[in-house]
Image (cartoon, rainbow, N blue to C red; front, side, top):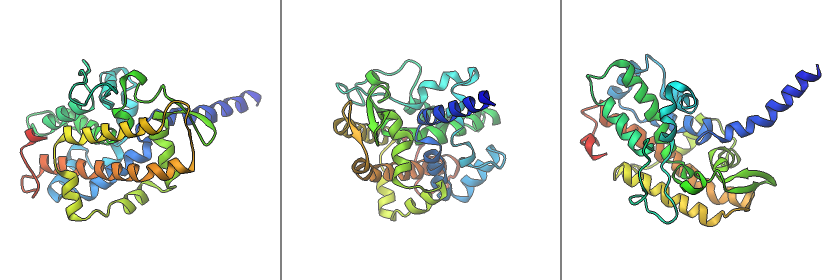
Length: 272
């Protein structure tokens, strides 16, 4: 009995640490995927349903976080981020030899657009794409390589020891709103057509560079040893909301451009 109690205590202690290792946390990725699903054209939805055999984008939104820790998919570990150090820019940062979130997104687009690829390859790349577009919009996934995207930046969150990356993965999002992912999608997915067009302008490099700029602001305002509480939740909640919405709309835009030739905003995939 004592051993069972001790085991339960260990689980409760380490569970928050495990959750902090997930990009945007599960709810953030689910929200991004749910918003994307609402903007798929009928042709794109049919293609996604076929590739996923009826499963949804949301169903697979968090799959890669677990898969990257398995031997079979260990090669994707570096694909979740693109670190840009303080003395570098997005374009001058040396490329990671094993790939990054931007190169992996472009690779996935290329495979999905190639009808000669096997169903298994296309399904894998769709799982990867739905997750990584979310990752690309989490600012700390564009953080400094020198501190592992904020993982080595120690801060306090409502008096408890944390690291900056973990705060952005889950804590700030959950503190901002105690919503389910469907409620997040309901509340955020209200962009005007003009605003949506602005969000979809540019290419993947432009979108990623904006996340780098957000990361720079966060570093400036959250140095090592910072104490975060209500003021910081209020300060950063709008950025979290904007990032989740942008990720969802851009994921839908990419998928519609791949799978629906009649999509009004489609363009050559090479321009992504």
